Figure 1 (tube, rainbow, N blue to C red):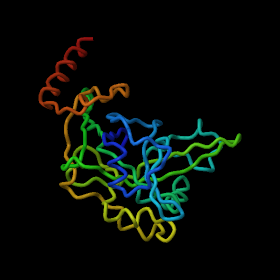
Figure 2: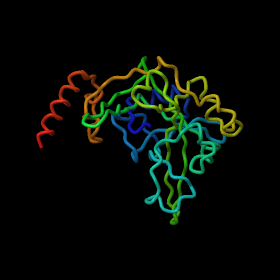
Figure 3: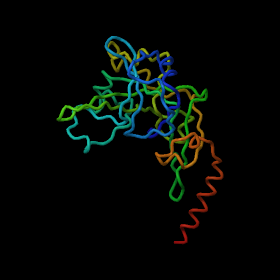
Figure 4: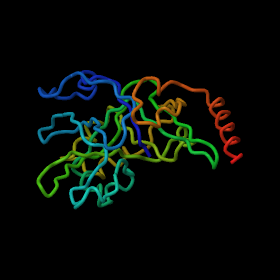
Length: 246
């Protein structure tokens, strides 16, 4: 599961890292975004029919083309990479519209038993560089002809480092595999199946952070600051004691 991400690098850096065509309509200035949530715009990289890599913004939450009423359809922010090629909601996009989703990192919550708050973590690469998640994109057109570009993040089984927090991990596509992943003209899902594996155990660093990240309106570097888990547990224990009085 991946329900929050952050992207704190300018377009200029993304152009270079992903070898993107520089569009004339997109400003190279992009404010840092520390707390991106579902339904908000996310950046995606895809390949045109001419083989050029371009970037655009899509709504986070994929809507398949066959959906009649998006308001009555479950918001698809993640898709299991192991089954995406067969599932009706994802198989067309998996074949024709694979994308890369640039992030600086993501948030995950470790769930505890009853009476204890979940502990959020900011999960980032150890080198603090750009991460490219594997993703899917669909353009949904309603009955009036209005179109909206939508996307989701693919997930895989967790590696050993991440497993204590959650059993699923976003799918990371390595830079040397960008070309194969984005080439939907000649590379079918079966041709990129070997990329659907967890990233190396030492790739990510898990930084425990405070509860401020729980609120989408909080969008500053402060929400990524490391906290003392022992202190957090002590606060939670005190809260539980007070609640038990009632």
